[in-house]
Image (cartoon, rainbow, N blue to C red; front, side):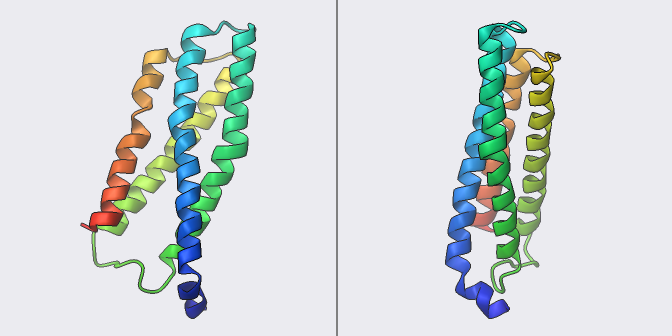
Length: 149
C-alpha cells in the first residue's frame, strides 16, 4: 500500500492544491457576501433573496465539496511515507491551523443558516474582521509547509 501512495503522490498533491484553492476562494468570498448582506439587504427584499441563493450555492456546491476533497487528499498525503517529518514542528502547526480553518468554515455555515432564516445578529464590520481569519491561517499553513520550521 505504501508504494502505491508514493506512486500516486504527485496526483494526490495536485488534487490537494486544487481543492484547497477552491475552498480558500469560498472562505474569502463568503464573509464578503455576508458584509453586503448585513449592510445593504433588508429581510425579504430582492437583494436579500439573491444573496441567500449566492451564499447557499457557494457553500453547498463549491466550499463543502472542496473542503472534503482537501481533507481526504491531505490525509492521504499524511499517510504517504516520507512526506511528513513527525519530529518537526510544522506538521502540528499546519494541523492546528487546518482544524481552525475547518472550524471557521463551520462557523460560516451557521452564519449562512442564520441569514437564510432572517436571524443575522452581526454587523458588516464583524464580518469584515472575520474575513481576515482565513488569510492569517493560510499564512501560517503555507509557511509551515514551505519553510518547515
